[in-house]
Image 1: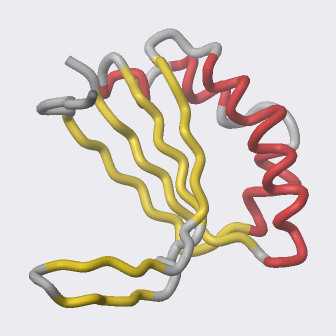
Image 2 (image 1 turned 180 degrees about the vertical axis):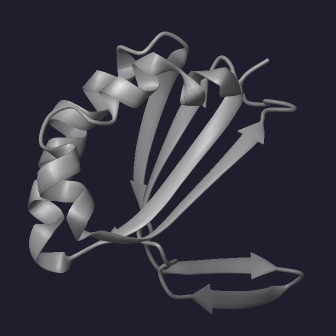
Length: 116
């Protein structure tokens, strides 16, 4: 069984380059060192066009705009010392976190995976 921890946030537009640099080169690598963190996927919301029930629907980009999806072995990972230390390493806590807003956190138990 695995778990998905989803973190979404907005970032001040003038700090997006720093946000992406630090997330990719420091924050995610530090968190991947934590036992029980399997994988991290980052995403940016974009406008959406979808057809449902024969009707075409359009939606603007979702808010918050940025999302990170952490695949975990257990929800206990999030409360552990390794996670607590990793989220405070590098430039993230002092140079990036203060410029984020609209932060959302959610934990999901994976109940099934399908693919081709």
